[in-house]
Length: 238
Image 1 (cartoon, rainbow, N blue to C red):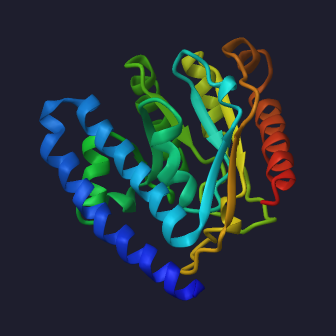
Image 2 (cartoon, rainbow, N blue to C red):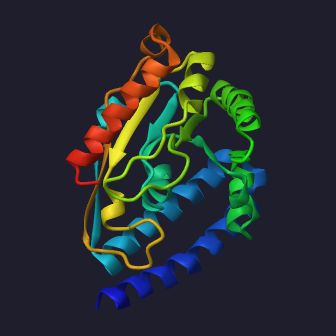
C-alpha cells in the first residue's frame, strides 16, 4: 500500500508541476503577483496530494514570528517538501539555489521567470558575490530571500556545515533573519521514492531583528542560528 500511495503521488506531482511551470512562463508578462498566485496554487495542490495520496499532514507553527518587513529566511534542508511548501508560508521571495536546477525543462525555466539567485556551488567566492549583490537587490524590491545554509539536503538526525551567506547578506542589507526548523525528512526522505504517512511540522523560530543581526559578529550569529535550528529540529524528531 505504501508503494502504491507513493507511486500515485509521484505520478500526480510530476504531472502537475510541468503544467504550473508552463502557466508561470506564459503569464509572466502580466506581472510577478500573477505568477506568484500560480506558485502558491501549485504548493497548495501538492499539499493536498500529500494528504490524500500519502496521508501526510502539514502543521505550521510560529507564524507570529513572521516580520512585516522583508528579511532573510534560513532553515533546515532535509527534503523537497519544505521547498515545495515555502510559497504558502512566506511572502514573495527569491530562493538561493544551485544553478543546475534552472536547466530542468519547464520547471527550471519557471524558476528563472519568477526570479531566483542561482549560484555555482563549485565557486564559493562567486556564489557569495551573487548572494550579496542579487540578494540586496531583491530585498530592496520588497522580496524576501530564502536560503538553506547547509547548501544541500541532510538525512534525519544529521547536520551539515552551515555556510555564512545568509548572515552576511542580512548584515550587509541591514535586514533581520527568520529561522525555521522542521521534520519533513521523516515523511519525505532525502532522495526517497517512498513517502511515509505522518505529520510534518514546520516551525518558525523567534525573529532576529536587524539590530540583533548587526550586534554580533558573523560567526556568532551563524553559530546561534545553527544551535537553535538544530535543537528545534531534533525536538520535532527531524
